[in-house]
Length: 301
Image (cartoon, rainbow, N blue to C red; front, side, top):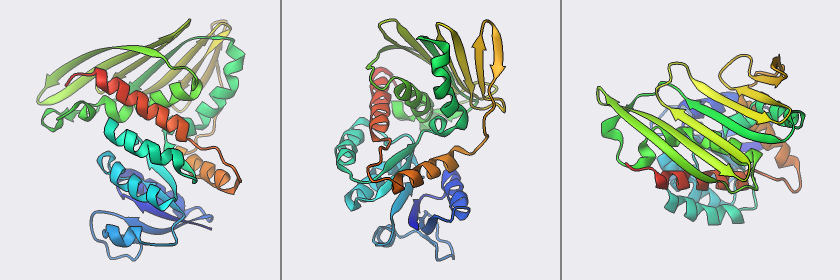
C-alpha cells in the first residue's frame, strides 16, 4: 500500500482524488486545501499536513505560484513526488529546485498530459514507419480569455501554462538535441482581455520544428504532426479519433484507448515504485522547464 498526500483540491486535485478512490494500491491519507472542511481527510493546516510521517507520495495539484514552496518542503523530506505542470513560476525557482531534484533518491514525475495519452505512446512506436524525420508541427491552444489587469510579468501571459505540454513532446522526441529557436508574437486587446498568438521555430541541422499557440482558437487544439521521408503521423489530442498514419496520401486511423492520462500517470508511478532502479521524468522535466524559461526570456511584457 502506498500512502498519498494531495496538495490542492481544485480541478486537478479532484481528478487525482477520484482516481485514488478507484485504486486499491494507492491510499489517500490527507488532502491539503485552502478552506476548512468537516472531513478528517482534509486539512488547511500546512504544518500538520507536512508533519505526517506515513506519507509515501505527495501529489502537488495546487496553483503554479505555490509549487516552489511545496516542492521545497517535499524534497527536503525525501519523498516521492507527482507535480502538475509547469514545474515552477520563474527561472530563480527553477535553479533552486533543480539542485535538489537531481539529488532526490525518490521517484519524481510531472503531469505532461500528452506523454501519458495512449495515442501518443502508440505514435512513438510508429515513428519508425515514416522514415527519417524531416519536420514537426505542433498547434496548441483554445479560447481562453486573460484579463489584462492580472498580467504583471511575462509568465502571466497565456502561453506559460500551455507551453510545457508541446515542449515536453519536443524534449521527449529529441532529448539529446539542443535546438536553437526564434519566435514571433502578436497581441491584441479586446474588452480588457488579452489575445496572444505566438510562434516558436526550433531548428538544428536538417530538422525543423514549428510550435504555434493562441488563446483565441474557436475550437481547442492539441495537435502534433511529424513529417518523415516515408510518410507522416498525426496526433490530435482533443478529438475522439486521435492518431493517424499518412502514407502515399492515404490517411489510416490507428485505434487507441481513450484512458484518462492521470490514470496512466498513476499506473506509471506504481510500476516505477516496484522497480529497484526506476527511471523517472526528472531529466525530461528539468529540460522542459529550462526551455520554457529560455523562451520566456525572449518575450517582452
